[in-house]
Amino acid sequence: MRGTDHHHQGLFSYVRPDSRIPKGHPLRIIRHITDAALTSLSQQFDALYAKQGRRSIPPEKLLRALLLQAFYSVRSERQLMEQLDYNLLFRWFVGLSVDDPVWDPTVFSKNRDRLLAGDIAAGFLAAVLNLPEVRGLLSDEHFSVDGTLIQAWASMKSFRRKDGADQPPGPGRNGERDFHHDKRSNATHASTTDPEARLAKKSAGKEAKLAYTGHLLMENRNGLVVDARVTQASGTAEPTAALAMLGDLPEGQRITLGADKILCRRSQQPFGWNMAAS
Image 1 (cartoon, rainbow, N blue to C red):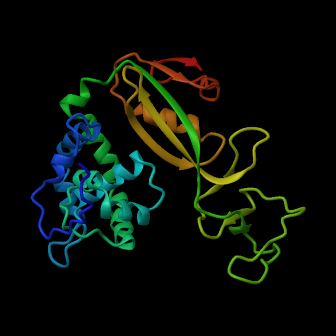
Image 2 (cartoon, helix red, strand yellow):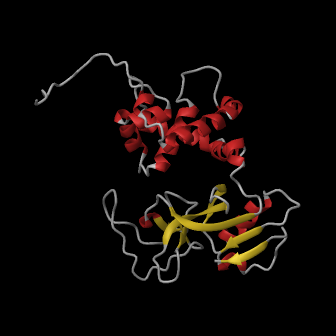
Image 3 (cartoon, one colour):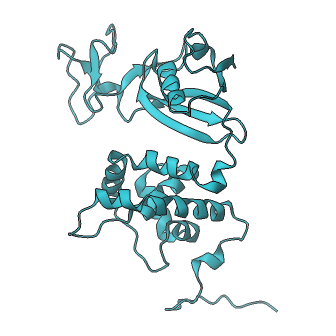
């Protein structure tokens, strides 16, 4: 018997978002670990906010939303808010009920910047790594380190001479510029929209872009990240950041480190670790 195509517009719903999430969904385990880490950061959250005034976005919900943005490669805060508006999985993970309104993307971005300025991101990673269920998965002897370029949110048109002697752009909001015979370098030029970005390229023969350098230190037992940093792009950024991350490891124990040839060329080994080029 054919069913009837009824359009239900019920005013009330008695179904919890949790009941819509599969029991074996990986976000359930991640949510449990995330909640435990966020609970340990409660005092740090209190120090970032005033005692009085209008309530802001709860930092716990904001950090859970940022995790979803990274997990599902959501390109912008505006798209993230659109997903939160209709995606039950996202609402459940963040901690929003079906009736809760989502936040304005601009307000979300401003609150995110407050957390990043307060070093909450590093504290959150440390809190996760210190949980008993995570600490047992980490190796304390074998590590790998690597770096990559992270393209800056700055156009090459903004890369202007520091002395202001270059050709002005064409008319309009995004006027064209003639870069012919213009030798650009970090010593003589800087971006007007992102002064900390540096001109860099991935390898020989590749185009140069305004970028930063991201660094990861991973343990080799389960491939978990134990440290992450972002620095200005330079020829020595990767080995310098790698040595700094290794310096934060507990002393008095010999470890092995897998790295690329750039880092292995360094002759100094002050931490007593063996390096292997990959």
